[in-house]
Image (tube, rainbow, N blue to C red; front, side, top):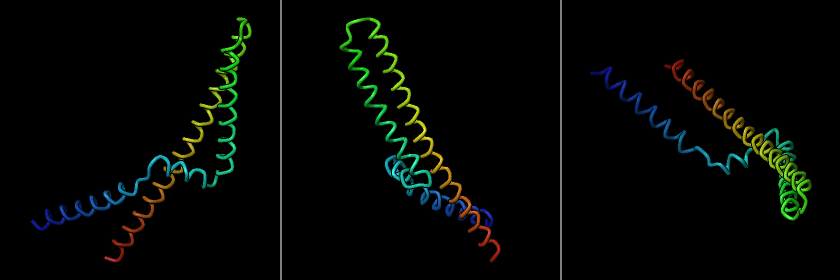
Length: 125
């Protein structure tokens, strides 16, 4: 019975630690904000500017496609619309991948800290 109680108490402690970790989980906007403050912040700001320019460009191309009267002009503006859209998608994908990288690094550091804390705890026992 003593071993069973010890196992239950260990599981209860782990559950409390996991609940604490999960309650600290941030939302999308907090993680995105941290991306703009991380080590790659200049690149993230530059890519955001590029995404805004691409957005304006493909909206302009969409407008020009809409008002074009000749088929050749419509094809030209449709191709540039698609290119602008793909550039914007690629840049936003890169920003979200950077956000994911920051999140993974933070989780690895948290795990390292917990393992170090446990090893010090076991060493003192």
